[in-house]
Length: 387
Ligand SMILES: Cc1cc2nc3c(=O)[nH]c(=O)nc-3n(C[C@H](O)[C@H](O)[C@H](O)COP(=O)(O)OP(=O)(O)OC[C@H]3O[C@@H](n4cnc5c(N)ncnc54)[C@H](O)[C@@H]3O)c2cc1C
Image (cartoon, rainbow, N blue to C red; front, side):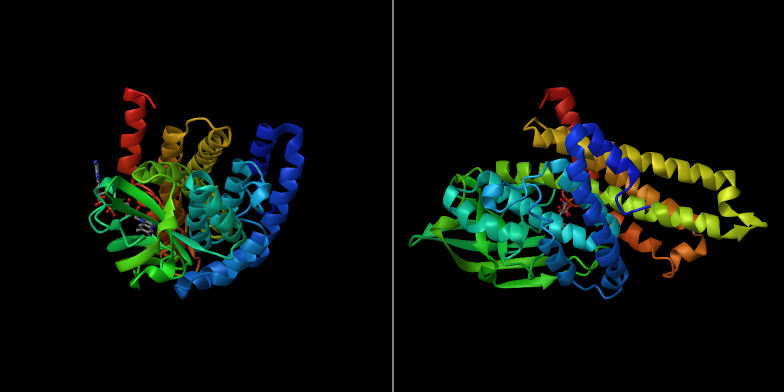
């Protein structure tokens, strides 16, 4: 079986009919790339907690980040579900690489949707081609789920924005060229695209999983940003952040599906290789039942993720669908990875078979880009009050 699996091919065919052939050629070739070039690096990246700079460079070269962007800006103008299918494979190959690129992709999408024509022309081609790498800086020590409680400020002084405040958990922080930064201005929360050199410091945060993806506390102290760094309209920043996160959640759902599939494949292989009581583990009904549940959850996750991506692509509301997809895929991914460890017995807990890496990576996905609790709040708000 290649890296692009049959279930993914079938969904692409279902969505695009005859046009699927071209998309599948692209995905198949990317799948080979993930299998040969990216997956073999994943274990060492985790063990050494090493930023996957080389993987990111190679994937920029492959046009990974440009997939969903307009040709006018150097993009490949592919439908968003095709990018999401590629993101699933990236998550399966190396979750740290996938998360770093997904966050950068969210910043590219923010520039595409909300920046003015001048910013777009200057930054979007450089960002999607990888010449400028970005971090999304919303969360603060006192503003996580309660993102409206921003304390970072930006005020105009002498024709420049004076920025002060501390950002928490910025993925790519310290390793990127630009921050898509959110700060309070006199008219409310506003968005800025600023040079990363403006930050006074960025402190790396050690963590359980996604150990190759960098997460940093980023401090701005009397930083002077050009007046033109404001993105869109002053006071609209929170609306922009929310909309960027809708897309981001779909990509986290895709990464979760990929991580779960990686753990599942290892569990299937192990259950056939390992014998107990004179027969392979896969002969035991309790193991078969686990595998059946795992595959069902993965395939259901994929359907929800691709559907949310399809709605986004068609310009339809997808806030609730993105939240549902992220909620379901991330929680199921965690369960699948947990069962994969169980099927490996003691060897699953030990380093040898690498399944605990998937569990450790999966553990973030019910927290990052909005926790499961916040996803449930969003979904229920849409049920009761409407979109
Ligand atoms: C590895 C990593 C990478 C990240 N990357 C980024 C990034 O690139 N950019 C960025 O801006 N942020 C990033 N984050 C931050 C992430 O989005 C936040 O951690 C997350 O939104 C939760 O915020 P918090 O940690 O402050 O938890 P809190 O908001 O303090 O929540 C703590 C607990 O309380 C629950 N809770 C809070 N409010 C409610 C409520 N109303 N009802 C029920 N339960 C509630 C939460 O669900 C959670 O279980 C990252 C975090 C991590 C760990």
